[in-house]
Length: 169
Image (cartoon, rainbow, N blue to C red; front, side):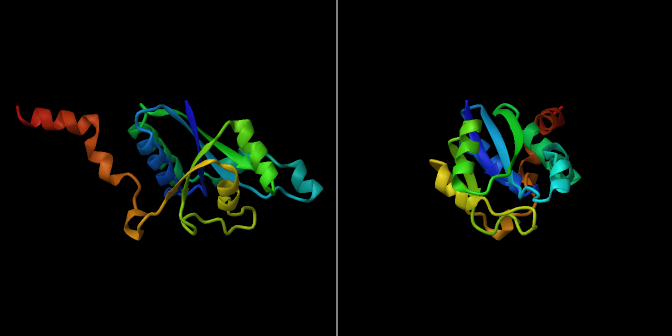
């Protein structure tokens, strides 16, 4: 089973990268690791309350969760797992240890500026990914492709197939 690293900013459009990975490896069952780079707090009081689970929970919007569920529904045959991991390191060796621990050797990344890592608690992971992941698939989206992530496939599910069959009766 192949594990694919996908950077996320918890936007719906970041899930387009996961959808691309699933299309790219449509013959296989893959595990998707959504990675969010997080600057760990420096003060003792902030560090004492540091909880990756809480941080991820606060970052996931309802819109993101709906889109993720739709992605799972659409590609359930190809998905082994989808997990979210915080990367809290600062440099390339730390990122290499992170990817070695996860056993990730493939990544799907967007063009620069596609995801928003402008918050003070995060940073752009693309340089670390490019330096440490051996197999990288770079995706360039056109502006018109960034909108709704899965609308073009919504009518191609089992229910629409059944509906078209029964319309003939």
